[in-house]
Length: 442
Image (cartoon, rainbow, N blue to C red; front, side, top):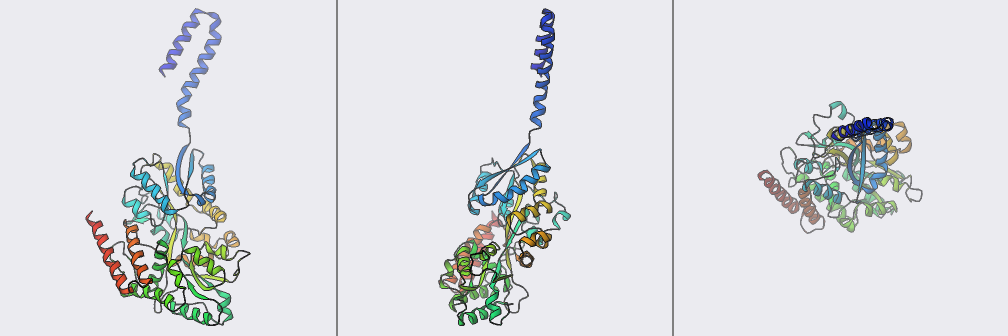
């Protein structure tokens, strides 16, 4: 404002010195003064930009959410930064940005298993007192729980995911059989149809030593009534009889020829291709496979049913491992109010509906599974709700990645006959307890 004052003095002097300058000088002074005064106002009205890093393939449908948000909030922009098509690499990029202490991201797009790590490190804003129970009521309880760490909320669900048991309903019906209710049924149906040469293999699952092995195993573990780690008490259940029986079941699927010997090297797409070729009765996979197995050129189009993973005999329900993505707020953001407004909008019902219709992802809000417009486009969603309702969570602990690595190694050893299931699970439990104990001391 000192510049404005100086200019006024200059033009006033010129006013007295020259009559010809009076009119033009006064106009110039008025216009220039107004412009200079307006500069800070204009700057203060520049839109706030919130940055969000995402996997590259997830960006196009997410733009539906962003466009709707920006239309209702013209003073806030969301910038989607394209990351690699790898969840692990995106997690590393977020982690590195936080460790360097200068993270450029305001909103954090998180897989379900990232929340405890990020929250324990102090990288996320606590949303517990910012989100009401009414805001959370429309979501699956397990989806909400996946955003908590030590009973505090750090992540809101955007889209869900859960393990699905696919089955050849045509083969089962033609043989006069019913879909399985237990794992024993699954084995029996598989063998019957294999004996009839209706399919080469009975049951396909992901057995390579990676996170997919864990997501598959926790479903079987739940089906036997067991557990991996209790996040509240930090009790470890891997060496209990239920966990040993779960590992033994998977080993027996190979030993009895129901699953192919190579299943211990398979990931999701390996199993999906074999199933889609018509060579198996059952497939454990994720919802994304539905669209692929029902493509026009698929050999099994219209011949597939879906259901939650079945339990062992004598157990009430099986489990479907919960996956999915949600959004949280970086503790380092300079725009916490705007970021919270974005989180609430991105996870609200109307924008979510448009997002699901565009993307075909599994909804996070329960009402959308039976929404007429969504069901008209994705007829299997009501069945998916049954799957999501049986969702089982991987343990919400800060050392999740290390705990997963331990279980992957020992479970793989059991499935490839390097150790017995009992030896492997006992060793996994011992190493996991040491990991958790070390975490208590640090």
